[in-house]
Length: 455
Image 1 (cartoon, rainbow, N blue to C red):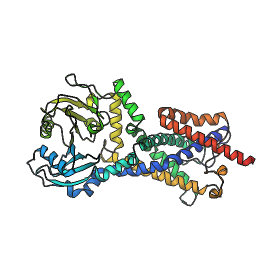
Image 2: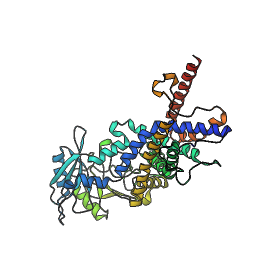
Image 3: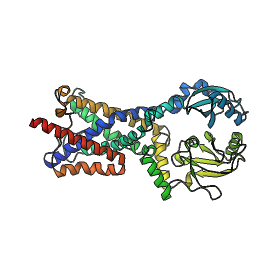
Image 4: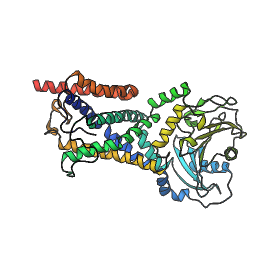
């Protein structure tokens, strides 16, 4: 969203320019990241279609009634992948291969496709293939674990962008504010781009805000702390059944896949398994009425129950079994009804975020949000280009102006900005720390400009 050309005069004009200034800086700071997140997020909405297109020859197998021994799947995958079978995804369709994640001694992982009817390996790829790379780009984890902190900061600043943009667009009795459509069709004029920017923000800003907020559970700092709060308050993970051991936090090599945000890292200690069997656990899951597709997690530690998680589209269909690998006995059967209200809210948010909860319309709305981010970025860049400062490239350090509105004085002005930014910074601490850094940089640049003027 963007400012209009003629905000009201007086104190409101000063407050308006101050909010506009920080809207500008927030955009400069996070838009490149938001564009990457929107691009990769938009692609990940079509994960199934991408996998089917790229790996069709590995996925498709002749449909048959007979099924080979699941332990033979794991053995064939371990040999082909050169490591240990860590989990197995069983598809819903008979004409699709099972996918086995193989963990190798050097720390790398592979996905091995195995025909479930013959236990024949149909192919091996890097773990997760193309869509896993897209996912790691989306979380920035491809560039190192610390980059997850950047995602959290960006998500917080995206909320600030939405709040300041809404403040700037809000008519407040002003004339000349586009409400339904851009007021001019001349793309050569700045008002067209200003209205396009504002209206795109108005129509899809709520979706972008939703994506930013519902993406927070995956963040390293805020997500972990909020998950702990949900557990301790009883609003999240259900307690372990009385007949089973209490939950334990999984070590990295035993972290179960496919269990969702609420049960993430939750494992259940049990009796030592001397002869565990994938076939036995699969038979238990099928007999228990767990619909496919589901993931069977094979623990490396012999004293842990096997985790079997249904791969759902709707949050309320979630179900996770904890099965004794030695006997096939079910130690825990965790369902949606057992989740706390906080866990339900966030599981629902995650399912909507991924475009799954409400089918095709859900995916289309999320895709529009991703496209909207690019429209906002491009229109904002065009507006800046049309009002950029002259001789920007020849300016000395103390004279650099990026084109942001000058900082107006006055306590009412500062209150307008702080009233929007500070509450969000308290809610998202990493965003607050980045705000302090931005304020310090802004203060330093103003001091440099003031000294250059005096000189």
